[in-house]
Image (tube, rainbow, N blue to C red):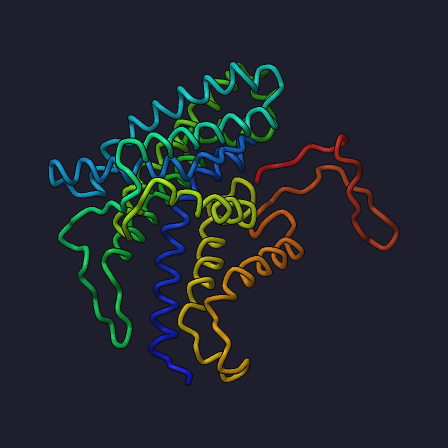
Length: 328
């Protein structure tokens, strides 16, 4: 039977969880969407952020969100150092495609194994005054363990967006994603800019990790669950588009969670229908549909700078090597 209460609660939970996924994907939108670096180890750094929050929360009783903010500079320096290694070993020699992908796979594997050796495979969690509390708004219950990460994720996402669009370094990051040669002609060093951008992306994982462990317990291998989802969010949102990442995260993850409590669909498909079993199928179908509708993502202003004008006013792009793409 249809229940408005379940529908409303599922919708709110989906939006809150989608906001958190935006915080996880926002850093990947920089590395993958703007720097063309396939950092599949990004979720592993999120798990490292969760464990750092766990350690400092357990030993000193600090709030997980505060911990995430405090260790952000450390994560930034780690990210900058990793990019220097990546650049020297792969990007400078033009081997970043497959060799670089293997490099980040190795980084992900090392992080997971080290965490398992040190902390085992048991789930770890943090304590805070708001974890476990719920705000009741009519028939909707809003757990603070999800509301707090949503608010922090919104602030993080807005901060990244404003930084990239309003500051000199932010615009330089956007420029290096569009035309590296033009940036060099203007006297800027693309390598240093990309190093800073990669450090910024890894810095966001410190906060995202602290939010993840607030939502629920974590263990070393849980990061694998996020690889496909966050890459899908970045691609569907529009490569490098922060606003697109937010919309894609809320639409996909929100819709994904909305099906969790939709037993009323059994009226249509029969009593044996379990909506939770079809969530991944619908997730994949949604990805295919969106990419067919918007091949460049939900929000993307990239289109060829040279087009062929046909008699009927149609526009047809010329060969890719003859065009330059604009800002995403």
